[in-house]
Length: 187
Image 1 (cartoon, one colour):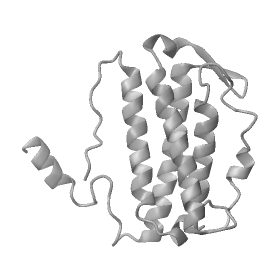
Image 2 (cartoon, rainbow, N blue to C red; image 1 turned 180 degrees about the horizontal axis):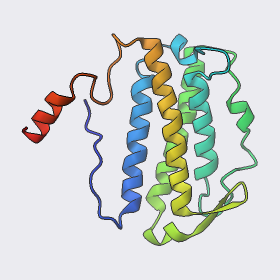
Image 3 (cartoon, rainbow, N blue to C red; image 1 turned 180 degrees about the vertical axis):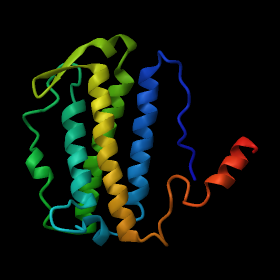
C-alpha cells in the first residue's frame, strides 16, 4: 500500500496541506481507474447513475474551468459545457477512455500548477465562481469537498464492478485494522 498519509505542515502552510489532500484524492481516483477494464470504465450500474467515464469527464471540466486563471477570472468559464460533461460517451473504446483520461490529467495539472503558484497572502483574496464571491481559502475547500464526493462515487462504482473479492484496497482492507495499528503503534 503506498504511503499517502498526510504530513503535518505548520498551520501556516495551508497550501502544502491542500496539495497533499489533492494528491491523495487523485491517487485514490487513479487506484480505482487502474482496476477497471474499458467496459467497466464506461459501465452505468443503474438508470440515473453516472459511469466512471462520465464522472472523470465532469471532474476534468470542473478543474479546467475552476483552476484556469484562478485568481483573475470567474471560476465558471464561458468555454465550459457542464451539461455535456454528463452525456454518456457514444464510443466505449480504449481510445475514448484515453481521451477522457488525458483531459482528467490536464485538469489535475492545471490544479497543481495553480496551487504551486499561490502564496500565503493569496488565501484571503476574493475570487468568484458563477459571480459569487469566495475567499481563495473557501474556494479551495469547496473544490476539495466537490472532488472528494465524486472520487468516492468513482470508488464505489469501481468496487461494485470489480467485485469485493478482486478489489485491491487503497486504504486498509476490512479486517486488517488491528494488525496495522499494532504494527504502526506498537500496541
